Image (cartoon, rainbow, N blue to C red):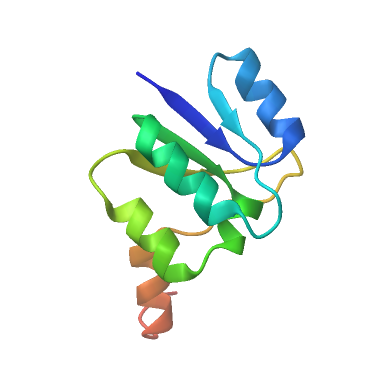
Length: 97
């Protein structure tokens, strides 16, 4: 299984030690890095800070595809992952707790 991490340099160093390929995009280039990672990997791990740079539609489309699996993961700075899409929708509709 090919794994690619897209995120900050410090987190990427840890993922490289674990055997993953990494991409450290410049600000504003996250979309291109995500597209390239999706083209080459079976599993794409996207750091939270970089996920926040993407338009919601792009991030949701990437996470909803069957392949590759795209997961938003916490980064070394402790940024938490965004809630799952269904949970966000329920909250927006006023049905969440």
